Length: 171
Image 1 (cartoon, rainbow, N blue to C red):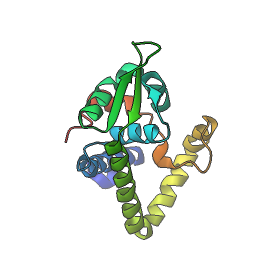
Image 2: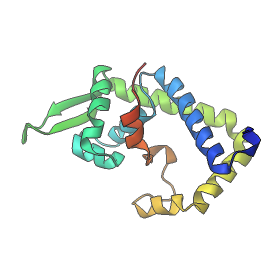
Image 3: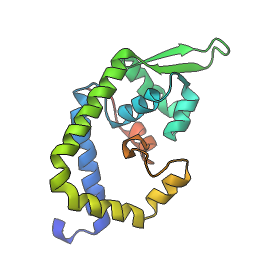
Image 4: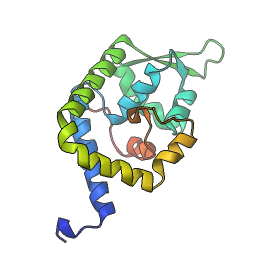
C-alpha cells in the first residue's frame, strides 16, 4: 500500500518510531538514549532517590529499570549505593558526568527546537491538537502535571516496552 493511503494512526506511529530512532542516534553520541535521558531527567530533579521511587516516577516496575541503571552506571552517568537503613535498597543519584550529559542533551534539544520551530509550526500545532483531542494532555495534567510542565519531562507510557525490547544505552 502506498504511504499516501495509510491511515493517520499508522502515519503517526511510523513518524514517532522514526523520530525516536533519530533521537536515539543523536543521544548515542552522549552515551545514552531516550529512556536513559528520561531517567537522567528524573534524577536531575532529585538529589538521590531509591530505585523503587525512580521506577514509580518513570511509571515502570522497579526491576524494569535494573539493566538500564546498570548501563548508565557503567558509563559513569549515575551512582548507585546501598541504603544504610536497608542493604537491599539502592539509592540512585546523578553523577557529575550525568549532569554534564543532561546539560548537553538539553542544549541539543534547544538547538533543534530553534532550528525547526518555524518549519514545524503547523505540524506542531496539529500534533498538539491531536494529542488534546485524544485526551492525552488533560489526563497527564490529572496525574500531577500542570500546564507548564516541560513535555520532555513526561515519561512515555511505552517506556516499559522500550526498555524491555531494546538495548537503550548501547553506543
